[in-house]
Image 1 (cartoon, rainbow, N blue to C red):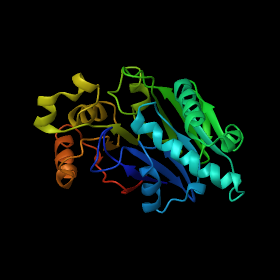
Image 2: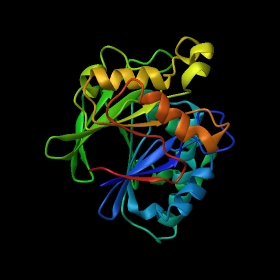
Image 3: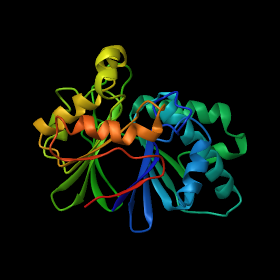
Image 4: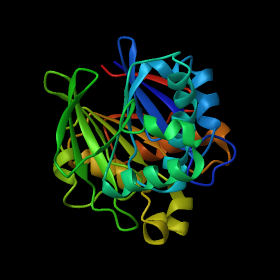
Length: 268
């Protein structure tokens, strides 16, 4: 299995795409969030990922940089379904607010001829806290991360026997969420900025976004083996990887990944 990171930037990033990624198992992809526009179609094309190979999508919350790309995917797939160019259904998972919002956006933005595909070929699945399912033929558990801004879910996926990959969205990890993070082999987490800049700006207080130091200390305390840091500032991308990894290594003894857009990470 591998992660293909489609975007790495925060909500208003312009120098890279908004944070979203896929998990690949064999020839199938699980898309996690979708960025804020039709740039998702370009990112998938650049990553050589065919839409038809994405059978499952998870949208963590309703902020535009996470949900709007999904509407473009629905629009493109609708045309393929309508013209009988593709037949396999797709499943889009989200909490009640996410699913309600996707429905409303589709009614406003998708051609009326295509709306009959919703809950037919395009299945909107409302998930509840602690609900489990199978995606990529792997056990997945969704959970409420108890976000402060809007209702937001994360998930854990069992990638191999007792090895777990955990995604905790783009807010500071709450005390109630720590139990899902603990002993994870992989954690995908928000890390808005690093070092002295983070100390001065204080993204935790201003936006409830994590700093590199915060995530690194969390991972060290909760015995996380590998951490992927994303949802970051988008200036100085040339030095972002070096600066973030050096800062994380001050507080964390595990492996740190700070991907660029379209970077692949093998889950081993």
